[in-house]
Length: 285
Image 1 (cartoon, rainbow, N blue to C red):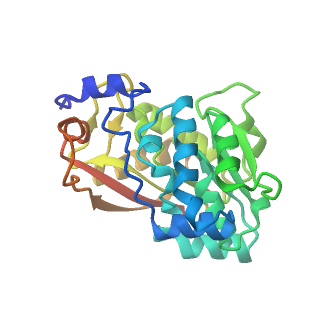
Image 2 (cartoon, helix red, strand yellow; image 1 turned 90 degrees about the horizontal axis):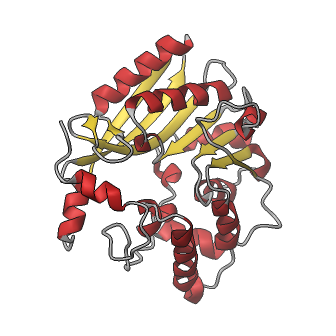
């Protein structure tokens, strides 16, 4: 079922016009994000908001993703995931490794480091390496963070793809707000690549979240992105298991997303009124 009115909105994603629905002038800073910037980055409390706004607008000039315009890079979503306690145990006590694929500024990685995880066990990958520098600027840790950042395209099959450097070396892969950018077929291709980065052992873990729809469908627009419901997401991982020869235990939680009280008409059209968020954990059995 085509998305009514989505095509025009998708055509505007990529514009640097700050009048679009996904560029917010209101900074709603969570306690967790503030604490990270004050305690980890040592930014004085009175300077935090100005610092964030400055970095956000620099990022917007690189590429105006909705997650940049709406400050979603401050969500620290991994800390609220149901698997977060297990992830901390694995990283802190079992010396395991984690990749944040599509890491943007690397905010999730900084949250893990602030929780006591050695930064040398963490990896971040993103298509746009400019975001790595902005992450260092946002968190003021260029001289202390030992995380390895990789500028890479998950769909690049060439030998020079830097993801090849960590082939078969990851215990955990975090994918937040990533797969939903792509078509059904490309989501499967990305997942197969993600599988290849894991150690191919029982307990390999993929966790994350992504936007979905109450009824799964293709979102019309330039990307033809597939929006999952719970059932289609589980069905996709069955197909991925068949293609990779892996047995996956898939757990999905659906979060309903309400419309903001003061949402503009453009934002209402962009959100389409039926968006959900899927939180997932995928465990190799």
